[in-house]
Image (cartoon, rainbow, N blue to C red):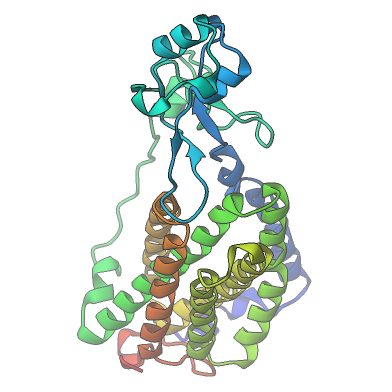
Length: 364
């Protein structure tokens, strides 16, 4: 096989044309940032409770009292129920008798579900996909439904049977070890990155400011990752940053509730560290595979990252059982895979492999 550098020599050095193409591609990627984490706001869950219809003719005091108090799963004061209310006919009867809410023994009153829907707090979000139907926003016309319910897939041209495919990533014990480790690493990094990013809407304080700060810490993270990529060991860079991200998240549960801003700072540091790991692992992946498998390997790792992006929101939903549970699970997963990444071979300063037999051994 022709040497890779010789085969691509016609492209030239890092000149004016290459710089123009690079910066134009960077400009093209800017709009992606507008929608990448818009789900933090579009799918935000506002404070809510069972709706008490206006035709019930209840005063504000009776409306508030019609929602039962529930003990939270963790420590804290009782909170109004999100999914139940006292039976509305009973509440109306007490109100019509001229009683006050304080006169009623609520422990004897039956409860019911939110039969009339929910009432949402609009102090932060006017509406989200939680409080509205997606079809109402997009329109229920015959032109909108195909957009929502169908996926258009173009035909994939057939390729030669001799071309490398995803099966070659597990064709030997050595390649399989590297591939499986990288797949798990990409899965974990994506879960950690998106888990921290999607959780910004649940942090104390203004959700928009928290999301801005979460994005702001990525700027120095990418600058530092560039430094790491040029002068530091790939393996140690991924290990140290991912391990730090996990440790920061694990420490959050130890912070007292009154030091909420310390907890937010730790979460931002976790986002900073995992962003570096995410940036470095891209280059690390392509350096470990030979030219014939490089794009296939990166595509398979990216696919594992997409699976991680599907799983990540479910980690955040676990906060309904305990606020600390997502941090504990994601933190432990990050530290575990950081240790596993030490098995990968080092690629810094090594020539890029062209063929399968030129790949480094696993464990490295």
